[in-house]
Image (cartoon, rainbow, N blue to C red; front, side, top):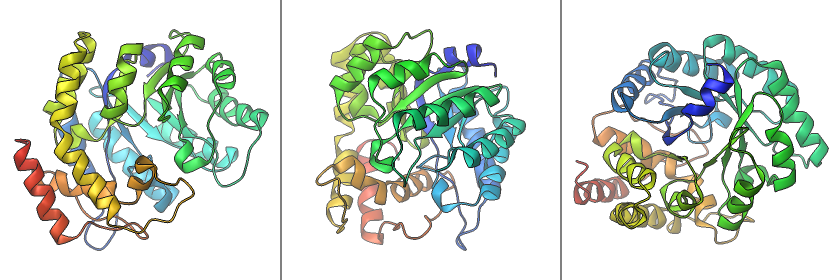
Amino acid sequence: MEPQKMIGKIKGPITIFPTHFNKNGDLDTGAMKTVAQYANEVYAGRDGCVMIAGSTSEFYAMTDRESLDMIKSVVDVCHGKTPVIAGTGRAATGLSLDLSLKAQDLGIDMAMITNPYYMHVSEEGLYRHFSTIAEALDIGVMIYDNPTTSKIAIPVPLMKRLSKVPNIIAVKENTSNVENYYWMTQNIDPADMVVACGIGALAYLFEAPLGCPAFISELVCFAPEYAFAIYDAAKNKDYDEMKRQVELLNPYHQFVSACVSRRNIPTVLGSELGGKATSVYQSIIKKAMEMVGLPGGIVREPLENITETETDELRSVLKTLGII
């Protein structure tokens, strides 16, 4: 999809789908196609996009060949029906560019490029990284500004500069600081770049009143009615209803928090729940998907699958919420 057409599609709940592995830990492209068809059905006549090959998809645990096979399986089903955003970022610019070009050839609608990770990078290095990739592509680029996993938080002046690069049309902004999101909205022209809420419904509750048009969330994977109820309330500027819908999900959020607290997770992030949840939430999503009749599967080492006891707890939570 051409960048200027795609920018108008970045609204609503954007679903982060996991990658489905079978019991042997191998990529299950058949399961990915099943989930892609589910996405087409859920999104028919509604705002939103599919997001794959990012953190929730365990891209860091997959070879480039596996990532491309997974992307192709989803694009083949979603093409022309549901826009597909695919993570194609790697730690180095050249590797990111190579994968992005190959994914573009497969038909993705937008490439999501994560901040470079592992090494420390200067602001000029960041600008070169994103602009080099964007200038080589014919499709739009979404910056994945994820401080939790990259150690980098793109400052507002640099993001404003990047928003003026042709083809850079969006940012998945994973800040947990609503003031930072506010200053992004004050300095970036929405005609240049969509600043999407990157960390789910809880943050969207605070960012929607600032004009945020989209939130990235796992909810459509197993609870689409909640995801669209939250978005519809935000779109209608009914923030009381939006808050009510988010609070209905409190049993689910409490369950995720409990799973995190049971594990000894050493991290420099301190007590930040969102960062620690990356150790277990993929498994939770996959189990929830299985419970609603979709493919699920296991996570790859060194992540952990939730226990049988936790699986029973999750089933109880989903029953309480009326999801199953």
